[in-house]
Length: 160
Image: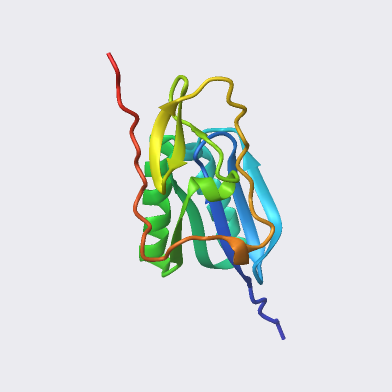
């Protein structure tokens, strides 16, 4: 008699606001696996999720919805939204600042996204040491919203 193997139920975190792309796999809210890719998000994300979906049953995906690389934000949103529609996975959108200890996030040139009085703005900063994005060890501390998953586009002002 062949015994069917049940896939472990997991939650996934995706951070693609800059390089490298980070994907964390969580079981019972604890980080159990980390995937880090330097290639473009568009090239890395599909094979990562193909493998994850063969190995696990994904219950929910938490993703950084911005600010950061506009192309990566769009790509991740379309990718995870498609998964939500086709597989009924729950989605949670997170501000990128929850993954880098509320530090400035690179925009373009010497412009950075920062939180100022609860609003995200872009500011010209010099001498900034960028804080790398990190996957949390536990999902319990992650502040994300299920009802607000749309991309968080913050486009810096172009000055002549």
